[in-house]
Image (cartoon, rainbow, N blue to C red; front, side):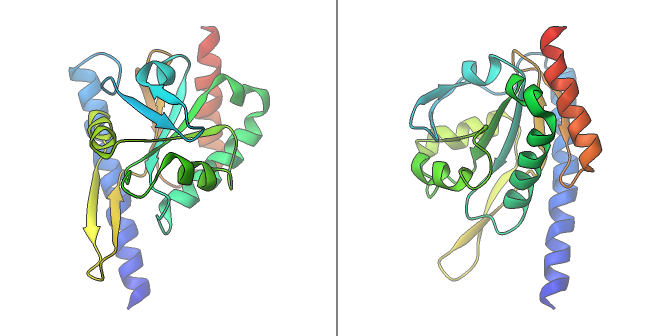
Length: 195
C-alpha cells in the first residue's frame, strides 16, 4: 500500500514538473525578459543575495527544501555528480538551491544541509514572505501539504532551471534525467559564457 502511494506521489511530481516546465517555456515565449523578479534574500553563507547575483553568469537553479524525503536529496546528489564530471567548467556556472520552505530552512540550516553535497551549490533563504514571492516569480509550483500530524511536506517543481547569463531561461533538466544528457546541458550552459 505504501509503495503504491509513493509511486503515485512520484508520478504526480513528474507530471507537475512537466506541466510547470511547459508553463515556464510558454511564459518565456510570451513575455521576454529575465526569469524571476527582483529580490533581496540571504544565502547559505550568510550573505545578502539578489537576482543580480544569479544573473551575473549562467545558472542552474533548483527549488526544494531540506526536509524533503526524496526528490531534493536525489536531485542535489545528481547535481553534485554532474558538477564533478564537468571539472573546471563547473566554475563557469552559478548553482543555486532555493528553498520553498523558508519557515524551517534558515540560511544556517541550508548551509549545513548543502555541505553534505557540494560546496559549489549555494542555498537561498530569508524572510518567508520574500522567499515565497521570489519562488512564485520564477513560475515554480510549491504547495504546502499538511500531513495531519502537525507536520507538513511540499509538492514542488522538481526540474532544474538553466538560465543564461542575464537570467534568461535556456532550458530545464527534468527530474531524474539521464546523466549524459544533464551533463551535456550543463556543459553547453558553461560554454555559453564564451559566445
